[in-house]
Image (tube, rainbow, N blue to C red; front, side):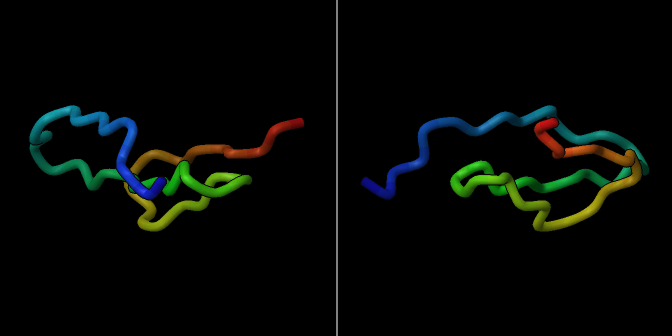
Length: 43
C-alpha cells in the first residue's frame, strides 16, 4: 500500500528553511536539508 500515513505540517515559518525527511524507507532519508542540523542515526 503506497498511501501516505502521516503528514506533519508545522505551518509557515518566516525565514527558516525546513528539512524534508522520507520516513518511508529505513533508515529515513533527508530529501532537503533545512537550517537546523538533525541526526538520523539509530545508535
